Image (cartoon, rainbow, N blue to C red):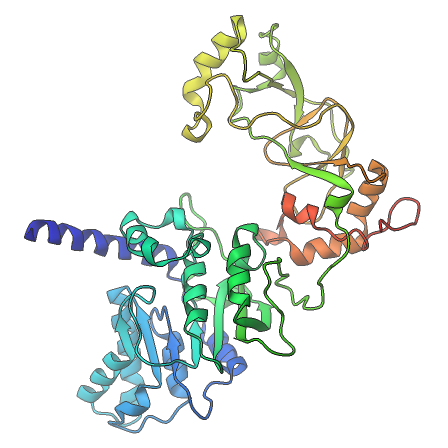
Length: 468
């Protein structure tokens, strides 16, 4: 039993270290101070909690703003922090002790006081004692699938399903759940919980108790002093925002499940028709690595019995004119109901081992994602990544690949010309710039859900009318 407990302790220690390495993103002092100002800390009364205090940036700044006479432990009780990583806790305690010593505390009591402020514990499962009017901090951002299994096992029983997409979601939900009637929550977060479709339930749940009183983007280059890096298998760069949540009231941005622009578009609630009402927007399939279902022209010629479709990707588009060049690759189209024969069978079986694991879950002769796009009519290809919306005409019979967006006219009587003009209008471009997730170097992550919800009263169409 002792050996098993030691192994369990070792596993948890390793998991906490791995979590810290992936999420340690410490907030710069100017950002901390500005957020505390927006929250109104310190108020006449009320305590402040940092649920993931790291090396103590928020704790030290919060303590600097209140009187902490030497030996007054009751004054210190107004500020509390929780952190799972032991080394980070020690760093926070050292910084707090230094502050107290500079205010006349002797070293022994300063260390005791620092221990009373910075706690080693798990905010999601432990129970910080008392009521906290203020919650302030920079909670961790890490997708649930990237969490160590030991921590998943710990948190799964206590977290609602809508809060498991990312560790940030769990901290947001828990922070709001302990907020009193006069509470204020000020957090630095990544921006994606505001608009991702998978966080609809999170926004709706938070919105039953709180609204947003302040929301603004932050500069990732200056907001953190231990930024994440973009190496293989490392967490992606963060696109941060500062957000202040307060109990529901006037002058609040309500959270009702709908996506929210991180760029301060508080009045941008569109109740009218959207592009999905006049067009069909689909995601182009991923067929796996080149040379299996997606072939170059020379390789395609060796499979005379194959059902081949000309296929295009974003690199087939002229970057200046946005005109599609002649297809240089072809996709093998197979049927779920019949195994291929002859040269096609031999080719797919021989290439099967090069297919990544996620592409080998179904029938061996089918690509990872089935070809289901309506290719019998012209369409518009919208590249998934770009600094703006690009609408590229796609002839009938040509297959886009690799998760580019495929737009065809719907049943509302709008032509493809009208839809293209609407997509390219300045007002639509501005709307997309405000609402699309940010990537590096000014690029936007242009998703199908984003395109579908473009307001169709906001862009011009070819005839000078409006899509309304």
